[in-house]
Image 1 (cartoon, rainbow, N blue to C red):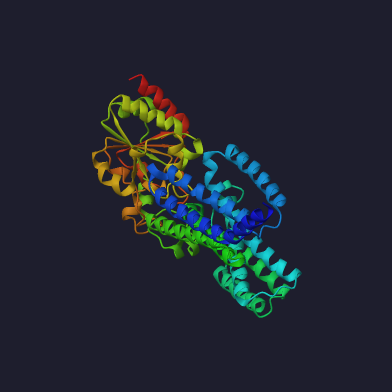
Image 2: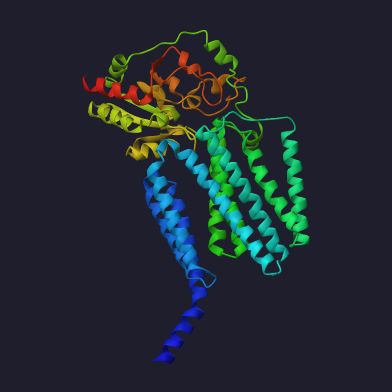
Length: 478
């Protein structure tokens, strides 16, 4: 019996490496399938579940790998991380999700850096030689990981209001970045030539941390959706580079998937803003601090038309079709649930209700979709910009709730406007447009919105949640 058990153990031990790699392959397939399904709102939850199964499989396969040194330390980390994760899931409001995504991106970059630093320190403390390829992988992981970490922390601070969201620029800023990149390359070169060069190792860490800060501070709050998606991509690239450091196939694959999907999403965001990625990163969009284009300046001479909740409710209740345009103001007021209640009330009166979603509305990609999903808004009522724009001319009322730059008609015709050429939701083409907003302030772009002064536009001033609540009560009484 003892001999048979020994043979079984030997067989399992011999099979384990192949079994782990097969598990990694299945996990990677789950990641790809999950990402594919996430492209559709109706299948997004299923895609997220499949991706979670793949990650669980990858984690379990790694835990039974022979390279694991201490299960007790892993258990402690798992327990602490689980407690913090559950607390964050319950404590963080949906309106704070953009900054939470930025914060988690930063932690992903920091994790990649720490793995690379740990691998380097292990080799140094045990006098183990590092190949040039290994040093290159470590240096790349440190560069991308540290930039992702500090850049994400700055983005988090801007979105959280800890620091100003206004772009911070100074003389010779880009030149300084180039000098720092050159210094990092010199430090990496010295490290490749002599892997024991501790000064070079410390230098590339400090420089990459500083580069992350300088990378994000000149970017304004209006560009945060692009920045967050780009930082998400960088966190994936950092993870992939770390995969080469520790020679883990599933980490390389998953990092490549996150990096590629993040870059694709970044390109989609840039297209939605009619801007190139270099212009987002280096132009300091929004530094004018509220300057207006000529078209917006002319609009300031026109009359603002106000509407009270009773009159607005009558317009909505007796309309045939209403298109709701959610924006960041809805998110701040946490009004998504009462907006859903308004839509349900209108539908019971025979009104066709749809939602128009701009790709960069809010502070992160898909921000409005997430909020509306939380309120259980049917996916079939969500319309993207290209589909809904041709239908505005046949829409009785366009109800804009807290959106600003994404509905500014100046983007179509005012060549002097910073947002000229940006695709917008053409709510001004509807028969009537009602804008719910606290005041007449400009959006994050700093551009005055000429929609507010259009002849067919009426302003309903107040908090989104309070205003929509009053609309619900008035519509119910019709």
